[in-house]
Image (cartoon, rainbow, N blue to C red; front, side, top):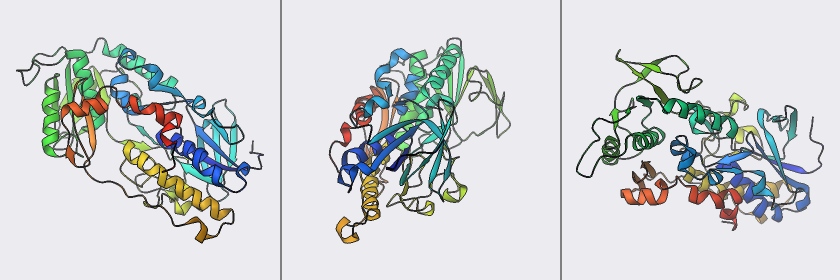
Length: 415
């Protein structure tokens, strides 16, 4: 059914970091400054009724006892009860088609119906899906929890685990599983000998953690050895048997074949490589070659999609996928949305000021916990000691930061 409201709808697609932050910021700082504020409404569309601290998945997938579940999963609608229903609407559904010519988003509602939502402005913040369903809401929290339970059942009897992918997700997952299953070597030991479960981390690169300098990557490899993880580099997996091992069949034993012709068997296989932007509903003409929404990297406008269309987060081409880049972009994005809405309402360009410009901070920044008490990383180009990585991220994988983010308190002030 088509929307019948006379209000101008600002549609935000996605209920994670980018989408919830944008919706809160618009409701707090943009709608109140628009002429005829009652003429505007924010509609947040999400396939899941809950949002989650996605970076916590490498620890959370092992056991519900390792992280507080009430902080890990948060009900989206409860975070927006502070706003009037006139100003805000939550749409529990999945975007299936963007008609950027007629400015309509088609949504398949969770209840099974379909709805076409016309938009005055549109923010695409649909994120990305990982190869393994262990690491995100694909499509919702119910499916994710079922996936974790299946994995845990296989974990209870596994004697060998193969993890493919040398980025943060692969390294963190290897570290968490290593410490949980094997413990940690003593202070005088450089590695854990005879681990209970053989865990192998495989990467096609010549080092793990490609964003970080070699010295930090080497430190990570040494910390992994202390929890019984063996790192295999310059090795590419070309085939798995069964083909859906680690994806459709989470707990299947797998045979991995490498590009050099060698192979290995494992009781569990976790593919922790790459991601796929959730942009299948967007016309290919609006996407980059890697499937992300093509935006102006300074204004965050998706200029090919027509006026007042934007994209932020892992589905957008504006920056390297990372939470800190999303949070830095939100004030810039919303300032430009406000400017565009004021212009569309008839304000003179001299009265609304110039665009704000986003500039990605490309300095070395990444924190990677390895087990419950260790980690490696850098911030703004400076190497961090293991203790600081634990203090900032490793103790609860950012859960200490998400309460204010989901509730909108982080965006209490216009910045």
